Figure 1 (tube, rainbow, N blue to C red):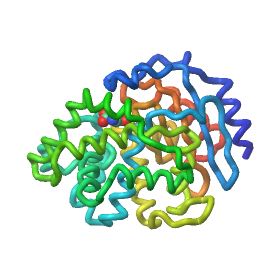
Figure 2 (cartoon, rainbow, N blue to C red; figure 1 turned 30 degrees about the vertical axis):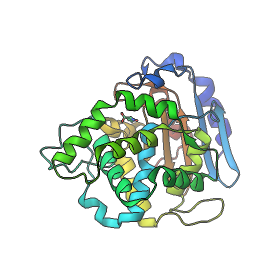
Figure 3 (cartoon, protein in one colour; figure 1 turned 180 degrees about the vertical axis):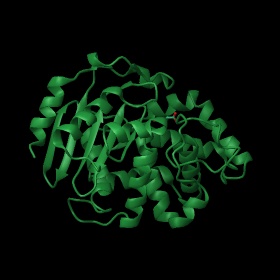
Length: 304
Ligand code: GLN
């Protein structure tokens, strides 16, 4: 498969001018990002890296980080995690509060904010220094020590993050949050501020395409069963109320963030990350989704 030729075709065919959406602005610092940015990186084997555009530039990974924190929580809690968070698509926006009361504070899945905040509660409760351990986890699976939090993004989100604070309070009132609200949202805002490039994201997500092992050195990070569960959740819940459309258009398990990144994997085959900060109405990268649709169409490889 000539991945570079396929990527070159996509880069030639598409640009930010083809999409009409907006860069996220509810986190003030994200509104400053140049809407013309566009990059993509495919990783499909040791030393098999293909890319175009701004693929090496770091951006705020936002909700993509929820896959890392879920992985860590599953390592700690095993199957008992599912007593605290469910595994069903929500069909609602990522920051919705509406289903919680009906479901006794058990969020529909770990990728909507409500679910990710319960996961944050678990990590804050179980780990001595969750921020440090999350960094260590991401640095280990990528082999890249320069990955860090972007403090400007973290404090920008903290200054406007009333809805997430409300979500934690609400879930706490319903009995599914153990720790104090402040450390939970502080950890959550930090995880969302992680700054990574498409290349680094593609490397990180290779563990989900490689049955839980780091491709380059064979180190086992997650059990194959955990990877099966996480990939299933990415397929069914990774794009909130657009999960069906992403499956329909692209046909890969994946996860998006409001920073405009999307990562997707094909089990035993490749991981691919794309970044364009222009979002559609559902909060997913508009150009990113189009690029991935082209990618699975041109390669002829999706999970379906
Ligand atoms: N930090 C963002 C929030 O909580 C993450 C949302 C996202 O990327 N979808 O609103």
